[in-house]
Length: 316
Image (cartoon, rainbow, N blue to C red; front, side, top):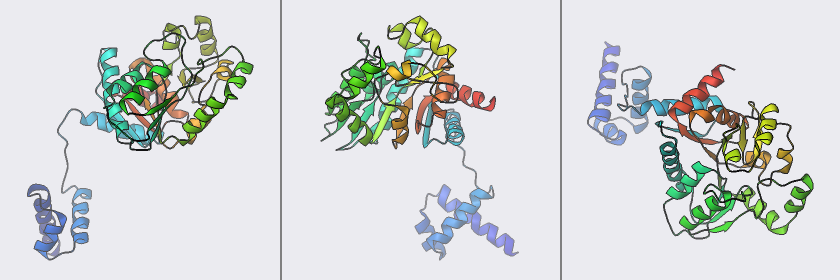
């Protein structure tokens, strides 16, 4: 009898809360209970299966994939959007969603560090214009000689324009000819100021590139086919800001990793919020490697790519 009364009370409270939209405080007042007691009873209703919450929308699968990615890779947040068979549409969608997400982290006085790439160019394009005070946008890596819309200079400038921000760019190429050239550039005063700004940034937004004969670095002429072939022979599957990593997220043995002008993975790993924006099945392995690097805290990708990343992890 006592169990029946307890069950009746649970059902009554659950009905008032979920069906009649009463607050926990209103239920407590009506039934002569404390708010804490009502809260605990509602929790029991969920735990015991008396109440089941169903989200009736196809995109619930995206949310499930995001939760799995968070659990597997220790991410703060993984946002998964529906996939598209059209690469350019997918890039635009990833850009729009990522722009909306990072806007929540930006306020007066914020420093935003940004990378490069066609998806980040879309992110910058979709940032809502707002007149912030004392916002800084700083580039994370050197640029390409040829303007291609996805250059680090252009991405940073477009984002800074939308945010009414001061913009700091690496006035140097992404890769230089020798390690001595790199050391000389990193000694320059304006580069050191820029690196200090990067370390103080509230958030960083980066892309993830795959290493293949068809990768962006090859198409834009930044790397030669021979250099990409050498990288693949060294085990490289991905790049983050021109830092080339293997399947385990570790830097490969390549002189390019000694000639890149930009933010190191060690510095990136020290930052509190690093958003990776990347999608498309051909990048699944690269994104998986990036997540294993320990540099990424937040991910925005698409459902098919998320599925493949999780499958690759299960196959290890």
